[in-house]
Image (cartoon, rainbow, N blue to C red; front, side, top):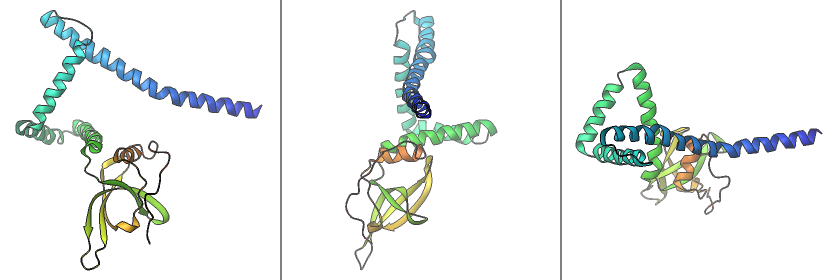
Length: 204
């Protein structure tokens, strides 16, 4: 009886975990349709009399594109800098804006591909490792030894962390992509690859 009860609980939990991603997708779709498409559509209908499903979402996406173009030029960057400076001085608004800015920076990091590869490097004591991202390599004069500049992010915010200089032979490559590494860091280890492979043999 106890075994059946444990089996039922495990299956129910597995069902809940399977439903969560689907529920999030439905919530996002509902948000896009109700809060964006319908609201923008009502506004367009009031001004022009034109109304058909999806028009509000299309206009919203075009507006985001234009905003992205504007924020990428000199005037847009100057305006965003002024908003940043002003928001940081307001107690509640400043905190909210800072969280949003960190989230934006976090989401943009995997696309920048500023890092060469994901590595495991020694952490605190023997046998323990942490995740790092190789940004560049250096060659030691005289010996020709290769050293790596490795950024070790702080979970769950990969925009902060520390820079480690470490010999290349002390690093382990798990064969992960940059996106997989960031997924593991951002989720504090909850998400990410379930396996890894050692590329090459670690020396030393």
